[in-house]
Image (cartoon, helix red, strand yellow):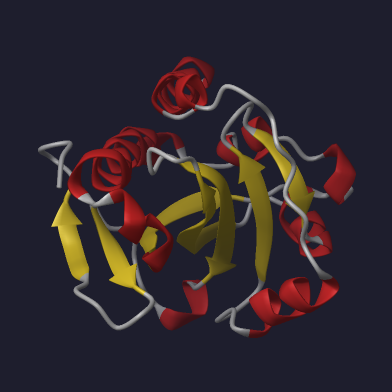
Amino acid sequence: MQEDIEKISDFWKKTYSSQIREYRGFEISDDFKRFASVFALGHSYLYIVNLHDFELEYVSDSVELFTNKNPGEVKLNDLLRMILPEEIDNINLKSRVISDFYTSFLEKDLVLAYKNMFSYRLKDVNGQVRTMLYQAIPLSVLENGTPEHVLCIQTDVSHLKVSSTSAVSFINMNGGECYFNIDISKRKI
């Protein structure tokens, strides 16, 4: 499974990190943290990932419910290791469709208008299997439109009786065209 997780992170690094030449931090306000958690549908955690080096710039305190680690100790690979083994291939395909959407399909001036979302299952530190809703929102982009910082919100939606799917959706947060339940089997939008 570690090898499969490395394939995902290697793809991300090849696709995004290679485009970002210089590290720039992202500042997050306390109001932003509060508002981001208000809109969660269940227990959730959020983090900001810098696609330059895939370091987590911010991790919410609530990650401790899922990992039993202090937020400052959590790395992206810790979160990836919680994914159920049978979900890894789908996560890899979803990553490819998401990359294609932001880097090839969209006009660069629209990247910040969209969030992507999908569901998957993980096993938390206590062995509980949870269905998670993953939402990712680019917060900053390079001149060429490549996302640089991304806010990721992961919410336990098990209580809603939804299941993991092999689709990803792209929501225009400004009321523009949305793309729901995109099939990931083609690896492109």
